Length: 344
Image (cartoon, one colour):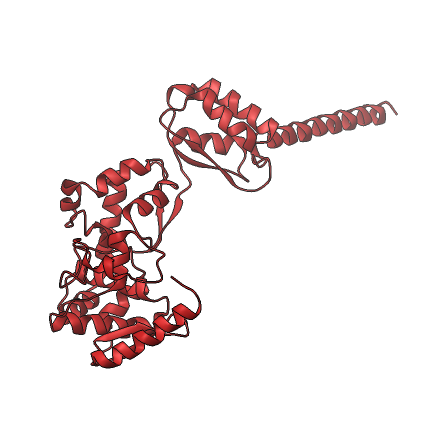
């Protein structure tokens, strides 16, 4: 009987100890390993060179559960985190406070998916990119307009847009401007495969000239199927030394990007991008062209057309002509359609 009682006490003690152990394990897991995100979704904290421990706490607290945030602060104090703060973009999500703290302390960043888009100006490009990176728009724009920086990559301030190939790239948020440009240069080289280089040579164009012509084609139409035909028309003009007379270059020169009509007075402005006044391609791209437009130039359609005019049905496509008389007839139909719709 005494042995039975003694065994019962041992069993109860073992149960109590087991319960305490389970509770402690649960508490430890809850504090250190349960997801840190307050919403349960992955969010990001951006830590820059001006941050200190207190400002990091201020940024982290709205993203974190109260208990995980408390643990993070204790770990930071114990390890002296405030004396060695690393910049970067860090995930606050399903990982617990311990792992999140280790990532932030050791600089293990979550990459940024940076998409280079077909945009019109260097200012637009710098604005788009800097909105996703730690460096500022003005810092990037200063490099893009610097002859020295452009020369380093084989470009000029006019042709530097040709270095940027639209795509999505992985970067760390605190990548420097110089490292960013280095990566863009390398991606540009990857884009220009042997096949693309050979097609550019066959067309009698340098790589930058291909991009420049592609930027005009991209502005002329959003109809990808028509792009090679438009590219062929402009290459025909280049081959016979005929002015390109590309309306998008006039819009670029005058900064009237939304104009539906090109007025006669604009055609005489003294601007190197005025392809009515100056023969050949303009000094550089008038936008970052799409890959579709670049490949359209490299795979241009061989034909005899040297004129084109937007169709009067406003479909975004064009009527093509071999003679000036036929072109005038097409232009008259388009002007009539504009007038009927009251478009100025």
